[in-house]
Image 1 (cartoon, one colour):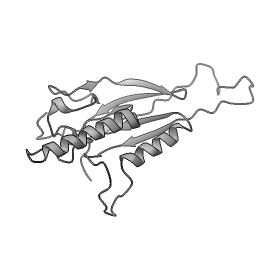
Image 2 (tube, rainbow, N blue to C red):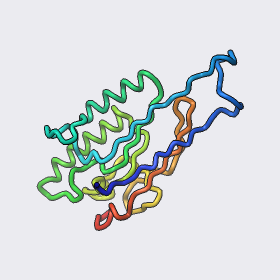
Image 3 (tube, rainbow, N blue to C red):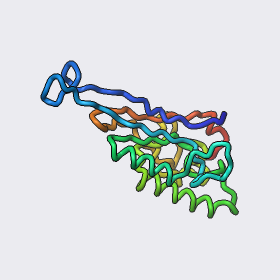
Image 4 (cartoon, one colour):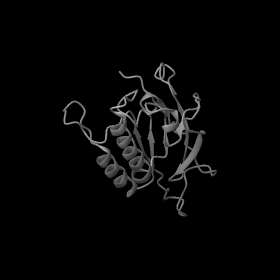
Length: 178
């Protein structure tokens, strides 16, 4: 099993301040609250399946399609656990241009199309240096010069509040220049 960053997107559900289930005005008809959570992790710079049969679950386009379909049916929150941007923990001079292009595509896809609500931090995000990590990450137990971090936050979707904070395994980042 790989060491990965953990996005602790723990669901802290809140109910309305009224006692009992919320209603539509008719006390016998409860309002149905629901929320779909999508969690991704360890994309590792992969934009499409490699063609192997070991774990071909889709690509960015398929993920975007599934999330768009879920959004058409109700509230959705999307979280990424990190190790997202690059396929290597350290970029060589020869791999850097291709890796930077892939990471830009992933960043745009997650930000503008999939609309990820919060992202964790992993070793594959730091391959091109701390200053190139984007967007800001949830990593409450991490600090390094140049890494854009986002404070823990509470999101609300479908009448449900979700507390979000990220933690990163220090062992996963051992030996990585941040």
